[in-house]
Image (cartoon, rainbow, N blue to C red; front, side):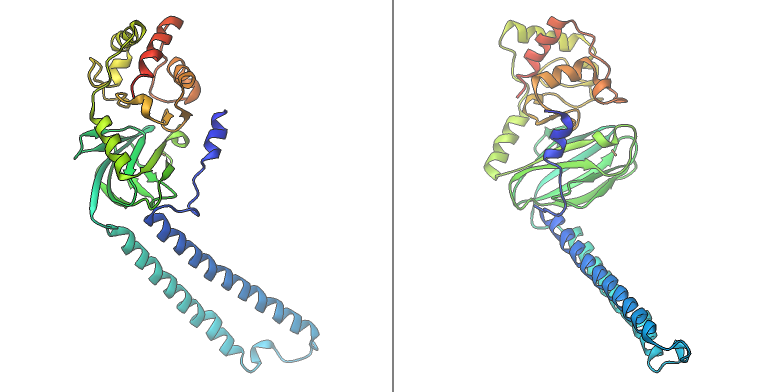
Length: 320
Ligand code: CUA
């Protein structure tokens, strides 16, 4: 499957909300659209009406401004209607902003998000869990999301679940998230942040509380020990090559922090921040030539022989 097809298959639509924040925004959007469409049709309708009437009339008649009632039309249509419509819309917007700022219920999970070029780190400080590019939340529960950027300004957006919020290098920002139905949702960066801004995605899995507890219990564990000779060789290659300078695999010597933590790499749905489905073939391609998949990404090419790469893949695909 081409990676573009994969992207299109689950393209997120904010018109298909699955969480409270997106729900509020969708309702607001339809109200704004309805008032805008009504106003547009009203103005066009009046214009057609006036033109049609003028065409039937004798051109020698008095100027239209002297017509009885003309002033009333100007006051009603030019002042009263816009003031009422815009004040109403403003009131609804302020109400929705206040709603979005309030927690949707008792806080159950805190997630700290770090945005960087061009991937996302999700830390669960209470649970002691780290899950790059893969946000897992329990459905129906309030999640406090705190965000900050490591380099430039990014913007966090899950169109079906939340509003957008900027990640700033200088201070924390916060939003609330609550998924109303279980499912897999795509999140993305909504602020241009450099060459691979368009490939700075992440996956949100909204799961049942039981599934969430199981995921969290597994995510807290260190990486599983390699079982076969090839897996052991793969781990040794990872630890002795440049991989270990940038990535952590808990339970091994690899403790870099520049790139995503790979302790549970194989349990994640995507590679390279939502760019590729997480398959063995894609992982091999990504390690061999990251610049082909994501030009400008900070990951250097693997420089491994064929057998070395296969051993490394044998190991990495066990990291569930
Ligand atoms: Cu990060 Cu755009």
